[in-house]
Length: 107
Image 1 (tube, rainbow, N blue to C red):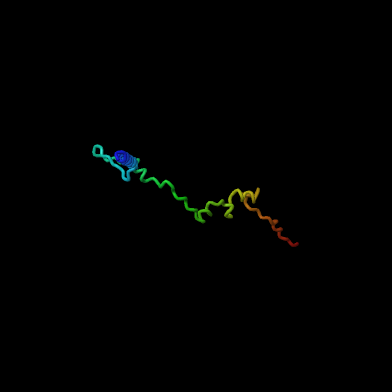
Image 2 (image 1 turned 135 degrees about the vertical axis):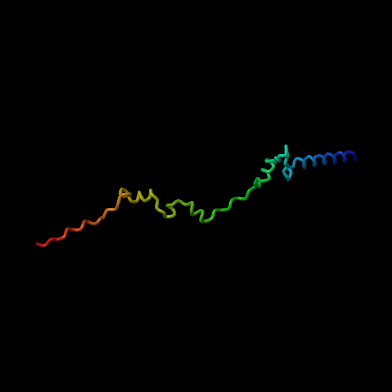
């Protein structure tokens, strides 16, 4: 019987130690010389996100569209236009038809 009581006391003491090791739910503020000093480590633990965050939501279709390269969207860019126009890129346009003939003077 005495052994059972001793075992029970040991288990109770172990349970008390385990509950003392658990993190307290509130934070303690200390007042020194009339100035309150909060426990920043405790506040950081309370404000930290949950240990297993949920996966991020998939991006919207409009966000995926914005992230596409301009060539996939059909937009012109400088390199593509320069490749297409070749040596005439940046040069003013020249008429391709011949100059008009001089007026005919009748004798």
